Amino acid sequence: MDAPDSAPDPLADPTHTLKAEGFTVSRPLPDVLLVQGRFLNPERIALRAATEAGDATVGVWAISRENDWTLVAWSRPDLVTITQRGTAAARWRHRRLPPAMRPDAQAFLEGGASPHDIVTIPKHRPTDAAREVLALLGIEAPEPPGWEPPPPPPVPVAPVVPPKPARVRTSTPKAPARPRKPEPVINVCPRCFMALPATGVCDNCG
Image (cartoon, rainbow, N blue to C red; front, side, top):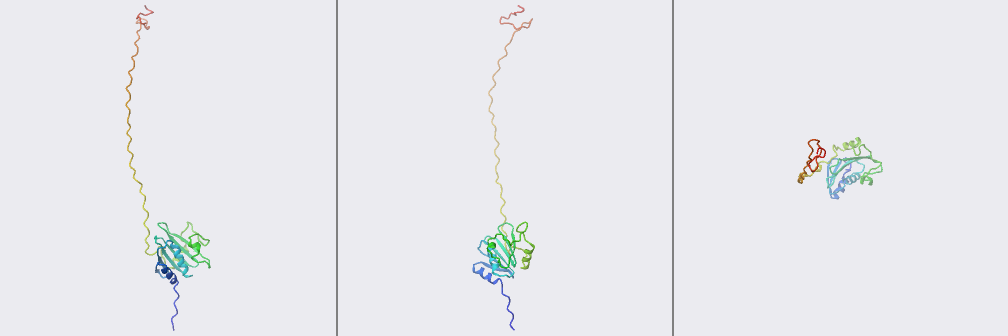
């Protein structure tokens, strides 16, 4: 009796497509792909790959040439997208898709908000259901395996400004004071103490 055929691999088609586009593809977990290449938008790559896997529960990490990354965890109807750019904190987005919608919907590829978003306060934080989808795939942390975060930006150092030299005040020498004119001497009569005229003879006492 022949052994029953094994179930088709849902990641076989996206793996073939990604390799045909020149990207490096590995499989760190049974249902999760890791894609690396010279693309700039890792979110679009991961969403396209998850869509090609159909309705299977899969995950796709994509790391861009700028060392930015996106993790897409897809388990219908839950679509979890986690994106890291530069040194900013990772942004979580959890959507619940209707039956006719796929992960590569144009609104999702453009990274915009949609009516299917589960809004958190503060924004872009993980929901409990999103963490459950990651746990279902065996993903313990959203960062790609072996990914090294970029170094923090250097702290700007204020330029050292040399102190201004002290201003030396120069005093202008004052002009010498003019000598005062001597007070005129007034002769008085020793008897009546009246001022004497120029003749020196008191007009009162003779």
